[in-house]
Image (cartoon, rainbow, N blue to C red):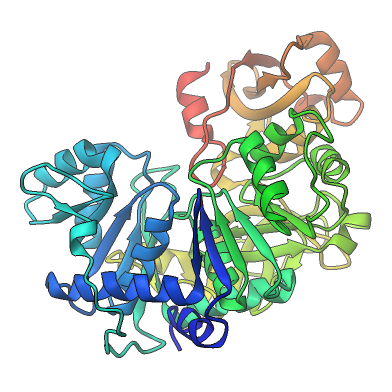
Length: 503
């Protein structure tokens, strides 16, 4: 079995079931499978061979879905790339991944040309939907009228995708996965979400990211459900889609939920929602509770994972939200999670350690980076770089990234704890904390704040608010105000950017 098998099986079993909706276009499982075959045969006609690396540099669209499946049907390896990258950043990934072809949106043509021109390698560019530029292919031109399967044999352990990390520090690294491992991710996620054929999942997270690709897109296809894809996230458009398509499942990062909460309640009929999920970045208990009230359901799941794990890691079920709200949870199916010290010994409850993972959803390696791979795995355990605690019942709570921990006067300050308190303040939309240099204390806590629309945050009042829940050394000493917080594609706040720009 490989990643295209579910599409082919559903095309035979439920051929007229709508599986993909994008803008005004609908695809049934049969029509999508046939369309994919037309492009897969086109890739073969253009010389693409099994094992070739093919980059997809697109926003969310039906073309992205079709391109991904076509790549897999010829036995090639998919390299999804963040469409926001500059030519320099794109050039690095294309070269490091050994890509021979990049499928890109027309609006990204200039970035692609500049990126490819800087490489010694010859990389073909195919633009979607079409191009009149001399020397470039149109994605549509690659399409044939051959709806037959390619006949390429794809084994479960064949390489399937290279997912590049967000690059919050240094150059991004490519996490390499085979077909079987990604299918394990799909199965593990569905043991939690329990998607069925009747479910309709709204996909607003970027498909190039592991959550959008492996958790939402591929798991929905595995279960025979319907996927509603939006090109970008916009809160009103997302709510319109939920009402129009009777969406039953939604996944968002904290910033998305925050944006949705700014839309007047009861503006849309959200009664079709069966469950909501959040992840990628911490979400304050206050925001979770507000979102539950807004969507009218307590069926919320927290997923705390990372790209190198598929994504996989730990999760908190709706039932566990009642007593453990704010925790990351326990290990996902097919995964084991531990919190360990530097000697790889399990910490005692309440002690800070590093979250480590082991299981059937982990990457094979960092592509062409054996030293980084060796540093990341210890006796089969993946070091996540997340600092965490574990309680007497086995629930794990991530408190910070190793590199983001603040040391003030010799005391460790974990930013997530401070941020959750600040985010509970009625005038604060969201906040991030970083350490800034201080002659007396070495570092002090600085809060970077986005105020709610029309609100003003009083610093003295906010400090007093924090002192009710935090020890004095954890209370922010400096405050900075911004309109938005810088984030990577997965929704994580880029604290290195804040440290570089705010002092």
